[in-house]
Length: 259
Length: 266
Image: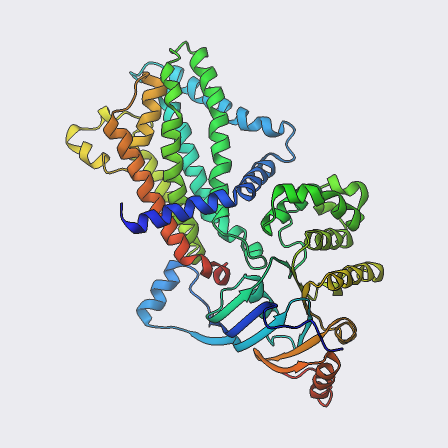
């Protein structure tokens, strides 16, 4: 299922030689006392580690890209760079259009506030206007399907209700690019179906979707293309079936995920 | 003005205006959470300063008697803006660290957090002026027309507080000691500022030292307007704004320089 929609001027996400370096400091001095102690003893215990190393990637508008790889291969870091949470150490990132990050559902939710208050606050945090959020409030409530609970503090919600509301807020705002990080692993089957129905609608509307999952059937079934990450670099890039097969061939002999 | 100052101020005003809805929502959230689950709710924003005033009035009119008529008004006219200043700073110092989970997951403009901390305290300051006015009436202190001048020192104080807040918000991300140091600094600063006393009580040869205190000019404006019914001199007004703008330029420059690093340290 190759993608005929690609064309050079229709790139939604472009990464050029991006490196994200984390300085892992063993026992980083958290207080001034420790800092002085370390400073005078000339101890600097750290090593640098590239979560993403010299990675280039182009995602054409309208493509659904699956990102797979072992734990710690850099999938979440990659999505966070694209979502603008991290500014990469080197390299350039270009994102065309507004982006809805579903990196962790309900990251901006505050437990003491009601569902309705959280819809507004979360929308504002993602950069939408108050007017836009009020306009979409009813359809968010409808999709989340939480009834009268909408005016209760969300600490009283079940985790399912919490997830449904968060997914509804993130997707109802009509983003150009949707970034989904493993969140669909939660929720019951009917809600998962509802989420994928919505994701399919996004695809029909030619929106760009970046999708991280450990569930290989989800990748092969929904994505147009897949990339396999390993130690911060792209190890394979192509048809989802091929990439998934390659990934499986890597991990099968060892039975358990390596490292 | 230097080009650096222009850019910093322009940038600050631009982002504040751009994210005004978010800042307002965060400030309201702050207030809502503060009064949540209390029977009287938002009324506490009025009751709190009113009760504090009642206590101070009783203490200073019966137990401790100073040679200053209507000492409670003398004190409160500057204690209210001071409370605004110190509360804002305490909030702001924790605001980036406190929103760490959010900063790690959503690309959110970080400047909104210290600004929202200050805005929520502006609301408290404005509300506390109501019991202040009632106290002036109750004590039969003259209600001066110079109250109308109050927006000017309020503006200068807000500018100064925003600058200091941005600085301490940044510093506390990298060294958590800052929040503790800030509390000590604030209490020392409180006693070195003519709040519970007047500058006249200080020996004249030390006045120059007190004039180095950047908050003294703006604080003085509040006391003159509410207690004395006078306006500060033009030099004093200019000094209060100059201190505010210098603090804002430095605070914003520091904040903007380090804000991309926050995500790695929260």
